[in-house]
Image (cartoon, rainbow over all chains, first blue to last red; front, side, top):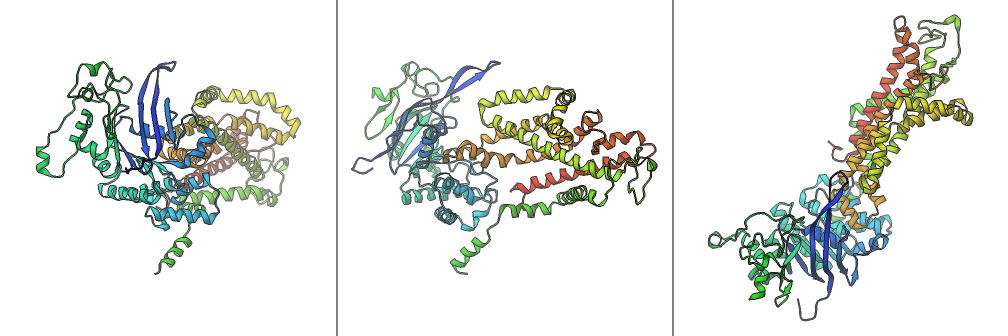
Length: 330
Length: 304
């Protein structure tokens, strides 16, 4: 970011999303799944914040909670200074146009019974009163913007390839000129050659419309290419948050180090020399996280204190945040 | 071709939904046959009594048990009533009962199913209500309801309309449970699909999510229930009439004709068989129509 202080668009403080587990004949609550547990970060206007982590660590849930698709258990989510967590009903509906989402599965996120034109026009119908011609012109504009042929407006989603379907989803997300878009693994279900196309499209659109992305992914190379800053999530918590280059060159948290060591290297010589940190065991259940640091069960550099006290979330300079006891002693 | 020409061509190639549906429906041979047969049955039943003008109730003792002739194309029964006139007259009632009862049960079943599937807090109460209705012994219940309300309704709406409303209402109110269960199951699955989540993130209110995203996608099971419902209603009406609590004996329906004439099946097999064939033809043709319509409404099948 440049000299002037960048404007914060989305500010998340202490966000918690817990799901109750009900069991037995009386459906009594026997526990909670802490899918997102006390997460805080800021997203600056015009940037792309990458959110990475392995499957089931709560990335998607975090994204959906921020968009208020779930009702968060606790915390504050400010969009342009307004807390949107307590907002409900009609007022929440009025806030929707500013924040949109691009989904992982381009097949499942489009209603098979609607034509592409009506899918893209749905946000327009919901929030604006347009005449038929205005509506059609706007749909055509959006289809041009995402590189879809205008003639396709009358076709159904099943007639398209995965990449084209994802473009339809992107066009729908763009329809209301949002400021903030949560991209929930938009490229995970796509072929590698198509992934590049979609990512380039996302970059072009960001430049053109000044969009801000929260880019959720488990593809570390893609995040490195796209993101301005990267947050690493493990078991419902963010363990490290740093500008892209700092995170990739000098990861602080042991989990981030392990994650980065798993990225395949295209150079076979370098790949051979590379030392991999192999994590043992599985991710603990988010319904029953370990005491102390969430990562203590699998960490290679674990200490006694890690099993007792939860590490503090601290700034280690230059916007590099991490939560680990190891860093405290250094 | 210039760019302008391409754009123009694209816009003129606009397809209308119902146009596509009709094209697909026409290519379904069974559905077309069903539509034609059902159309003919409706036409015959609607126009027939104006051409074949003998009163279905008229007792012609001198011509009882007559065979087929020009005066009585399908003969007469043991009281001398003209069979053809009875079948035409009975068809009007049977079709009206079948269609109306089907609509009632479909509306209730779909409403209960969608509400139970979509709103979690309604799921328990509504499905327990459905279970309650399923657990009721249907025929005794029908008989009690008819016994209790027949005279009141007759007094209020006249003998024919009164009994029609009663039968249709009772059949409709006791046959919606299967539809409700099937629809609920489908809605539960659909609700978790990402396009519903996408609609939520756009800010579409629940009522429009239901009408725009959920309903069109549960159309197939509803269609199947609808076609089976018509058959079911016609047959239930026959059973009630047979027990003497439906339409009065001098007011023919197809089911009643079958039951009245079944004693004569040895001597005059055509008398019960012809109304039975009418019932079967209606049911089968409606089934095929439903099948074709279901395929035509599904864009993934359309155009194959």
